[in-house]
Image 1: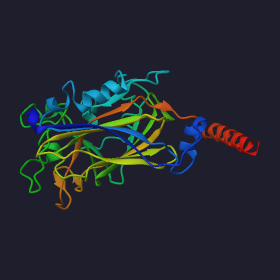
Image 2 (image 1 turned 180 degrees about the vertical axis):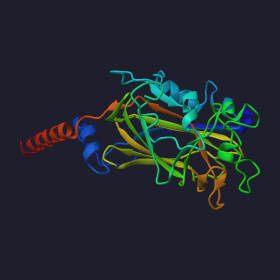
Image 3 (image 1 turned 180 degrees about the horizontal axis):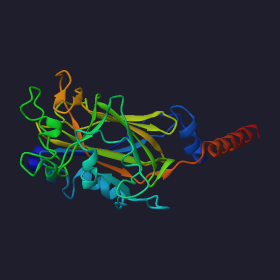
Image 4 (image 1 turned 90 degrees about the vertical axis):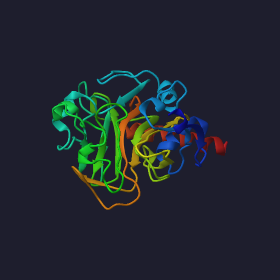
Length: 309
């Protein structure tokens, strides 16, 4: 149903204080509101996974612009390319619904979980749906309409299908979650990315489902909304910063309804939204704050000397 899909590819530039050209990175790290925030956004919505993966679609362009997939394990010295999380590894069986998935499941030392991404939520944790094989292979099963026991018969019209079969993913007890980054295979070694994207499931109400990006100092780089579509649609939203910005954290807001546990939702409001694949640039190590502070001090001292001369 290609005619049910729309795709956009746009560039936006945030408002910030200008930095000296040689000190742009340092200014972005240390001065509130000083980041240059040159954002290229990629968005798309469709009825099926195929609608998001055609040759000219936003997801395909996003992957191509980030570079090769670096896989599921450590990649010492690699700073280019991308990482992906699709929630579908059989090794996740032990932490699938009804169990909570650990927040650091994809920030481990070794494959298949050394991908440098850590999650947090103001809620109680995260659920990954079960594979069909865990449910005896009897349909309906897996990550579609019975995500965590929810189905299309819900009064709020929950109707979810997996982008990459079979699992899908959601925070519990909140409709918000944060993603932060370490070097893949080196938990505790803080890192940043230049791009992040996600597949959102069943976005039906405009401007409720968003991603907000923060630099390493915690200043916002901008808020971007996922495209809304028909019931059971899939939306892709990716944002890439191309002026040297370092993304330290991404906040995802999923509609305005909350999954409270297996088979249960909070109050019926406007829209329940779940997640599938995450795609992001290879996490790069962040320099020690002490070193950056010395660099900043030296650059600012040089600026003062030039102004006095």
